[in-house]
Amino acid sequence: MTQLSYTNAHDISSRQPVGNKNELSAPGRIQELIAKCFMQECDEKERNELDLWINKTENNKTFYDDTVSVLNDARNALTVLNFDKETAFDKISVRIEENRIFRRDKAKKVKRFSILMRVAASVILLLSVGVAYFTWKTHTTDKISVTTASSEIRQITLPDGSDIVINGGSSITYPERFDKANRTISLTGEAFFTVRPDKEHPFIIKTGMFDVKVLGTSFNVKAYGNSTDAAVTVETGTVNVTSGSSSVVITKGESVIFDKRNKSLSKSKNRDINYKAWKTKQIRFVNTPLTKAVSTLKNVYRVEIEADSNILDNKTINADFDKQSIDFILNTICETYHLSYAKNGDKYVITGKK
Picture 1 (spheres, one colour):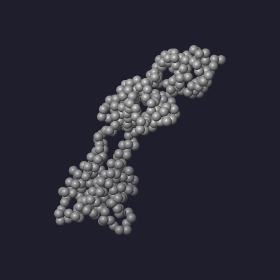
Picture 2 (cartoon, helix red, strand yellow):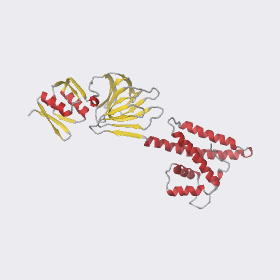
Picture 3 (cartoon, rainbow, N blue to C red):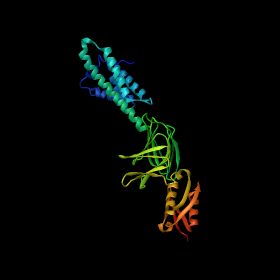
Picture 4 (cartoon, rainbow, N blue to C red):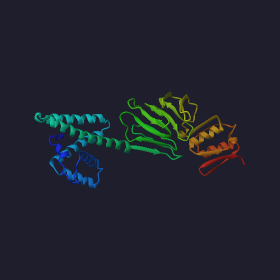
């Protein structure tokens, strides 16, 4: 273990030539340069400035070597999955205390204690910069985002082994590696989750409207920003949905609806048999109003379908579709009800039979 030398540490901050602007004149500047160069964030001018200072005295070189050793300890600790910043600081504090006892001299106790405190503060400050930097880098560079096109469906596997199928026009953001407390991701749009069980690390989905918390289950989350409401539907297991101070627990066969207008959660039995048809492309209509059937098709195939309400009103449909194309389904509906449809750009338009 590297021993920090405190006996002549005062030289670092006090033995600076007067009147030379190229010299380092304050401990804060020294700490800043060491930290920046250690993290390879300094430019050539700063590197030369630090080298000049290091080579000026043996005390400067010793201080630099010992400080880099401490920072290396911090970086190595941060590479461990279960890294605890408080533990790292405690270890550094213990090192400083051990060195204080080792170097203590009764004849110069007061003077050296003052020097110790000053250097200890400098080292802790420098360590703080390193920990803050590496933590920031972890949280800003280890995020992975997956965004789907309007008609695209993608399947991904998270670092913990959980599987997600993402509907079109959606976005998922998750860390490259989950931390030791929980497994948190964010979602905009719709996705079906099959979460790997882990009682010690809850799985949390943040949508901006509500949070979903589970331990291990399968469920569907629909949270498009442009829809009037959002929903969570459970296929297996138990899910906790929270929004503000409201909290609802749902289990297999249940749903919770989030009303954007009054920001409320309402729990009910799931009555939407097609809630995951966007994923399976298996659609069932049982005495379904044609207006609702068209709305389901728009969500399943992520397409725009336009039709005058008077064409669809007072009509119901009974039919099962299994992985057929949107054109096949629309053609079937139109033939049944003596209608016609055409594709206009990216939009389907249903009209009366000509």
